[in-house]
Length: 443
Figure (tube, rainbow, N blue to C red):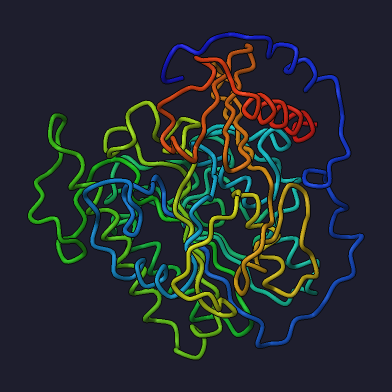
């Protein structure tokens, strides 16, 4: 963690987490799909476009106060400005657990995917399989782009998880944006097209071929390392030479975001207007900005890979069909697991909660409170950590008994650990409440 944390009696809490169960409604796993009555949505059911940016934090996103240097992203800005910005979205600190939480609606300790490269069991009921079961196969589903849920570097077939179509990058990163392994039907070929453009081409082709409602999970590798300059027409960062160590990484990182935005524009322009008007667009960052390019108020210790806000609080924008709060900002406590129930409800499934997921579709039209707590975790094989927040206080706990606590209302970037001083009565009560809720969540 970013500073010495004092070790206190939390070993008792850790033991309690292991020993005690719960019946808390928020985290109780609900019955699987076969116990629910299926529905058949009309042919005019909305399409769903889920765009996942790889390593894009708030400090690299227009519209947030974090960060001083922003990329030029007119298409992402339009998604934001024509819909809702969710300020308090928590994801995981690395890519694989965020993706697993979205595709299963479960916290990482339930699926075993808690760090980059962890493998998701194909026995899990993915959101794509769930939609098929619950809508009588009314939707065509695809994942195009980065998968990274079958271990590191493995050739895998995500279609085994109930996805109708998959093509993309099976692992977590590429050595070159211009030479990389494209996986399709468990076969790999070496692709030399710029990876962000290729994923967009494949998406355009797939969407064009659909004749019924569709759900596309488009997972770009951008702006993840390496720092390779995109084609010059896709960005505004000038004539970038080949990157070598010691150069300023930020222009290359911003250029990758701008190239992704350029390609998002191509995709949206390729969709007929009436079809686009019938599409819900969700844009999310899968974890915080890498430490090489993290901007103030984040640091090397509080960006990607950490449970601090810079590692887990990322952009989430939703616009399109049924989103009536135009240009609005919402401060609900959202977690990446919540996309599961939300996407299901968009397709017409009568579900508001399942697994660890709560649908935030009601927020498309009204302001209400959905969650009282957020939870996230990290286990990289060395550090086993958890974090929980009620929107005012945030408690970080290590399995070894160390802990930190922050007032994220007055200290949003976690500079003042409250546990370094004597807690007030209100703070003590808040800490006890968070500890109690944590015990329930993790059982």
